[in-house]
Each structure stands twice: as C-alpha cells, then as structure tokens.
Amino acid sequence: MSAKGFDVGEALTSSFNILLKNPKILIPQLISSLIFTIMSGLSILQLLNGLGGWFLLVPLTFLLLLAGFIVYTVVSGMYPLMVKDVVNGVSPNLTLAANTALKKLISLIAASILVSIIVAIGLVLFIVPGLIFLTWFFYTIPALMLEDKGALEAMTASRYFGRDKKLNTLAVIILLGLAALVGGFFSLIPFVGPIISFIISLVVTAWASITQSYIYIKYTKY
Image (tube, rainbow, N blue to C red; front, side, top):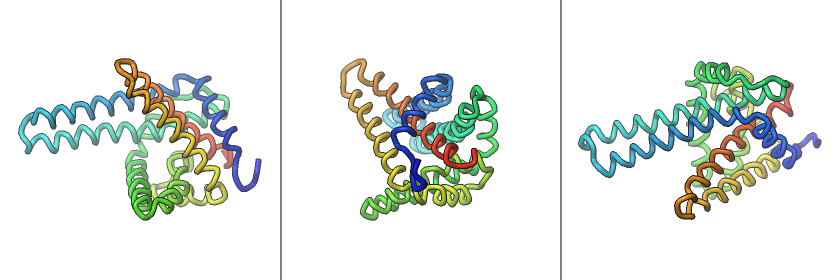
C-alpha cells in the first residue's frame, strides 16, 4: 500500500466481495431503487395525464420525487455503518444502520445537496474542476456517518482524507461509472433489457457505496 493512495483493484474487488458474501446488504439499495422508480413513474404519469390540474400536479410531483430522494439519502447513510460491521467481522445490522441514518437525515440531505451543487458547478466550468471536486467530496457520507460530523465538517474531512488519493479515487469513480454505463446499454434490448439494466444499476450503485465506505474505513482508524 502506498502512503499516497490505495490499490484501486483491491478496493473494488474487496468491496464487491463484501456484497457477494453479505447479499442482504443489497436490500436497502433494492428498496431505494424500487421506490425511486415507482415515484418517478407516478410523476411521469401525472405529467402525461395532467391529473388534478397543474396547481396540484406540480407540488404532488415534487413531493413524490422528494420522497424518493429522502429514501435514497437514508440508504446512502446506511452503507458506511453496514460496511464497518462487515470489516469488523459482524453481520451487518440493517435496522440499526437505518435508525442511525434517520437520526442524521438533515445532515445527510444537506451534504448531498451541497456536494451535488459544487460538483455540478465544477463540471460546468470546463469539467476538470468538477472532477476535482468529485474526488474531494467522494468520502463525505462515510465521514459524516462514522465520525458524527455535520455536513460541512464531513465535506472537510473527506477532502482531507482524499488529498493524497485523488488519482486513485478518480480511477474508482471512472471504473464504477463505466460499469453503470454498460448496464445502461442493456436497456436497449427489448423485453428483458430493462430488467437486466435495473439489476446491474442496482448492484453497481450498492457497490459504489460499499467501495467509498470500505476505502474510508480501511485507510483510517476504523
């Protein structure tokens, strides 16, 4: 192991093995994906049908998407705790992880929104700044959940943790992104394609959350 990075292959392989050996760790992401898909589908149907008129349609659509976002945010906060259990040789406690994430919901939402805005602005500014910001804040959720930090403190901790791991982190992000892209191509296949694409997306999303948590846990005091 280099003091200025980590083994990208080992991080991805070990994280995927965590998923394979603890399949129940996929359950939160499955619930999140299903809820978000259902909420998005309902929103699209309402827009197409104009149910309730525009005065009710817009706020209702917003509430449906907000519900999906909240579930996704809670699930993202669960993964650092579940991965920590696995690393410590304990079966992941989904209930405890969910309860802890719910207690930190406001901080999780604030961190998610702030990071998304900063990265989006960076991507608009000739892409490179966005990639830099993405590597800075990749470990925000693990820092927030494992160190009892607020949103801004967790973002600072993520940047500090990743300061000597930028290229390795970027490589992880790119490889996971390519895996997700491959999964997206399956949606073009008639009938079974969307199902295959959904499954791959589900696995890759969970894998990404496990990976960022695993790296943060392994290369800190945890």
